[in-house]
Image (cartoon, rainbow, N blue to C red):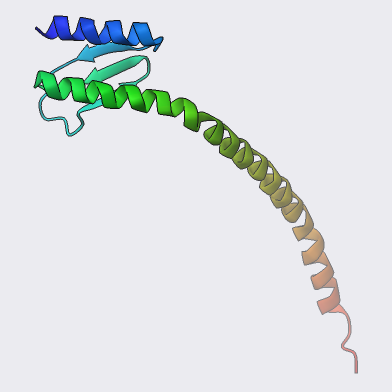
Length: 114
């Protein structure tokens, strides 16, 4: 029965143009019902109806990732730009420290103004 259900699920993915391979593991002790890892859609439910429900959920999740992807790309680009800016400013700050130390040390050594 497992192979038949798995084959039917795989057929659905192929008809929908979703490039994943279904693996129904019947894994016990897993808190997840299913997940997508790399190119595989894993289903851990033992019950066939629950497995179909999880399959539907994971297909929706996969398709929704395509909606979220531009946002993640934008946020990651912003993070990269900010990290470069921070690095540049940190390097400028570190380069200025010896000058600051020298200026303060020189001023401390000067005779007191009365």
